[in-house]
Length: 252
Image 1 (cartoon, rainbow, N blue to C red):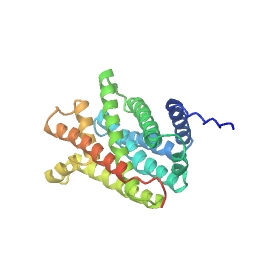
Image 2 (cartoon, rainbow, N blue to C red; image 1 turned 120 degrees about the horizontal axis):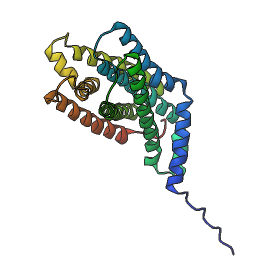
Image 3 (cartoon, rainbow, N blue to C red; image 1 turned 60 degrees about the horizontal axis):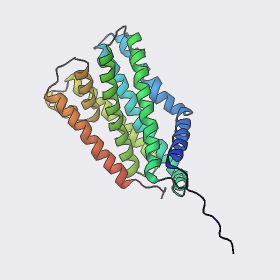
C-alpha cells in the first residue's frame, strides 16, 4: 500500500510576494484610486495657487492630507468591503496564507502608494507654488505623511470592521470625510473661536495640520504639536484595535 505524499506548504515569502503583487495590480488599475490618490491633491494645489493664500509648505501638506484621507475613507475601506461581499477573503482564508498576511499586504500596498503620492504632491506643489524645500523639509513632510496615512488607514479599517455593507461604508466614509475636512480647516483658521480650535486640534485632520505647520517651521514646536503627535498615535492604536478586533472575513 502506497502513501500519498502531502503537498509541501508554500514559503511565506513567496505567498506574501504574490499577495502584494496582486493587491498592487488591482490598486494601480483602479480609476477611483487614481483620482483619490493623485488627481484630488493636485486639484487642491492648483486651486490654492490661484488664490495666492497661505504658506506653500502648509498648502502642500494640506493637499497631501486631503489625498490620504480620501484614499483611506473612500477608497481603501470601500474596496475591502466589496471584496468581502464578493467572497475574496473567504477564498483567501482557505489558502495556506496566514490571515495576518492577507491584511498586511493590503495595508502595506496602500501605505507604499500613499508615500509615493506624498512625493509626487511635494514635487508638483513645489513647481506650482514656485518654492523650494530643503532635503530635511522633504524628509519631515514624508514622515508626517506616513504618520497621517497610518491614522487614516486605521480609521478606514475600523469603519470596515464595524460596518458590513459596502454601500453603507461608502456613504459613511463620504460623510466622515466632509466632517473631518471642514472641522480641520475651520479649526485651524480659528474663525469659530478658541474653543472650537482646541477641539479641532484633537481631530485627525486638525492634528495632522498642526504637525505639518511644525515640521515646516511655520510655528515653533510646543504643547499643541506634542498634543497632535499624541493624538495621532492614539488614533492609530484605537482605530487599528477596533478594526482588527471586529473585522469579519465573511459578508454575513
